[in-house]
Amino acid sequence: MSVLVILAVAILVVTVLSVGYGEYPISSIAVIKTLLGRSTNNPDYNFVIYTLRLPRVIIAFLVGLGLAIAGTILQGLTRNPLAAPEVIGVEAGAGLAAVMVIVLFPSIPIFFLPIAAFTGALIAALLVYGLSWNGSSSPIRLILVGVGVGAIASAFTSLMITFGNIYDVSQALVWLSGSVYGRSWEHIQALLPWLIVFIPLSLLGARELNTLSLGDDVARGLGSSVEWQRGRLLITSVALAGASVATAGTIGFVGLMAPHLARQLVGTSHEGLMPTAALVGGLIVTLADVVGRSLFAPIELPCGVITAAVGAPYFLYLLYRNRNA
Amino acid sequence: MKTVLTTRNLTLAYDRTTIINDLNVEIPAHQITALVGPNGCGKSTLLKGLARLLKPKSGTVYLDGVAISKRYPRGVAQRSTKDVAKRLGLLPQSPVAPEGLTVRELVAQGRYPHQSWFQQWSKDDEQFTTQALEITGMMELSDRPLDSLSGGQRQRAWIAMALAQNTEILLLDEPTTFLDLAHQIEVLDLLYDLNQSQGRTVVMVLHDLNQACRYADHLVVMRQGHIYAQGTPNAVMTEAMVSEVFSLKSRIVPDPITATPMCIPVTRRWLRMST
Image (cartoon, rainbow over all chains, first blue to last red; front, side, top):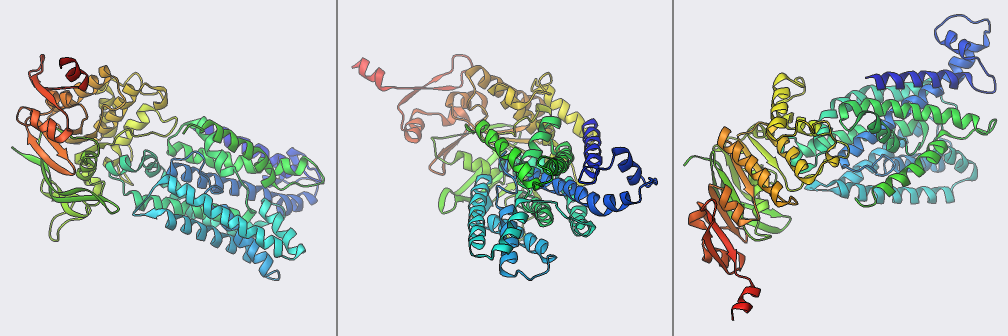
């Protein structure tokens, strides 16, 4: 419990710093005053904070939340510490669908992009699950098929980029790298329903996940309806990952890192792990966003680049540690 | 003799390879049954079938006359998998726990079938978990992660999980694999105690024929997916059986401690020396 409180405080601190930071700096005290609805003597603050900066910070937090839970579920389901939405092809599927829309229908309203990304994620997941399911689906099969489907999706994405119009392609590349730049309350409204439905479902699935992570035979012996529970949790995970990618592009390695860091804090049991990982994920992306904005200011790095810069070595470290498994 | 688990014309297969063919077996209640046989004879597959983990190609598994396998004849009563888990516990061969899982967390998993969506952790759950930890002597180690324990301690933790499930019937697939001799005896003694003091029915796959004879009331010998013989160790363990089932020349002598049959293999080295 105290871990959750500390994480929440850390997130609030980062939020205040992130909202205050920018070309038009605002002091932390003024940020807190404005957020609490107290009047400050500068009328610009309301506009800068509420319209320009707060939505992107909230988006960063929510996207981190969704990706982290999606990753936690996948790692529990597959009993594989290397599993994450980007590993089983879900993020690649979402990316392909979005790039396809950008390149093939350049005139289509930007509003359709999230829907396309979500559809792609779902198709990739169904494809992976369908191909890996033969009477009963084994965890290793799921990962292998996922890597394959992810590779195919990435190949098609490259193809799209090669043939696409140069202006559309640059737009697609920004989106692919994962960024919360220019996000507004509208984006939050689009993302929130998914989180409201699927985060409670994830938390309710925590106990099932504990049982499934002991292996199929043990779980069946304990009376778990393994295929049904696995399918249900997989859809929950894909919905959260798809909605997150739809909102902010492919922010990689959050779904991989957050569960591992959370495990160090609270252990393996999913009742505690799930909410902790969620907050860790939220913290990672909010932090990545503010770091990306400040590192080479005024040039802005997408937060997906920051999470990849930290996450890729972490992934290699995990690979190294699991080299004998 | 009262039976708890029975199979009727059970056929089990992986994809198209049939492992168990048209098999009928009855597991006696409140006794220890050992399944023995050479590698690949189907004893582990039969145990999985008895635990309703495999959907039969044909035939049915009954628990107290109620079908528990996914395939069953029309008109026969069937029990839900969670209800079965309240009566029948299973320990598969060399299970693996997620990294960092503590002994207590593992043992608490045994309470899964007794919980539901609205009823989470109860007093019973707490009591049976503590009891299982005590019986297996894992209390002092309960907060340690499983991966920090020795093979014997780990196996005891898994048995504790099966005990916390509080089932009358325990099915175990080679509970002594990877354990040294002292730990093998420790695990088997523990199962014997549970059978004696609480009348639990134990069914286990064992590799060591002499241990099977020492601990089992009922011996089921399998060969190529069929039951070759079953009965008390005294009735079943013969030189002819060992020769036919295991293709091994042996002498059967009384165990010097328990007087149960003991199989002494006749090895090539000895044959050469004697000629």
